Length: 238
Image (tube, rainbow, N blue to C red; front, side, top):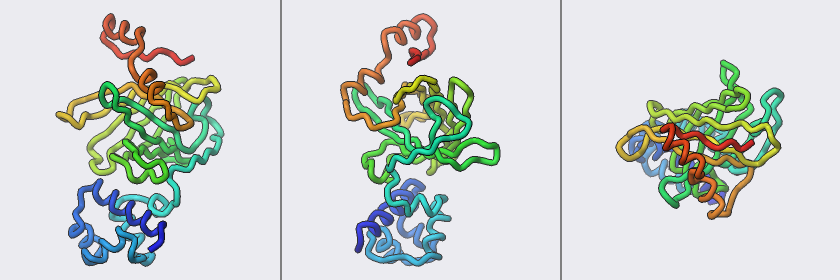
């Protein structure tokens, strides 16, 4: 078996589990035996093109999502109209806190492909542990982004549960900076209640844990505004 076969097999397993299919259930959907599907996922047997397309169709993903060698590669292409922090396509790194000290690392992958309304398509790999292969993520969201001057709006739906939507609003600073802030709003995994997080966005990986913790905790000014106005207003990065 090759490393690439194992990589593709791991992605098939990851996407299958995200949509809650057992080996038996998914094998039946692609008209293969459980044993054959297991070999695909372990990378011990190569699949033919027809099977590859059928698997992608059942997983609701593109062939490139399954076959691209390194989903974490930073490839940036300048866009013709959008300005500011998100003026390029490619990978952006997002960080937020799950509790006092647990940092959740994610990647927003902005595509040059547009929707029928003209908005750019975006993939959100949430809770990544492997930066080489983003497909092995805790959750996977699909969505699109709307450029509106000083702010960028992202709307996503959960790959495994399309009913669940999440929203990200980012300050689109026009300064030449590698970082900006925003707010993530969605549904909590605990109690399925509305929840929001302060988030930090970066064009490059940030390894400094202390810096991330300091950046993600509310500033004194943000805490003061919350006490006075009962609203989470992020401090301007401009």
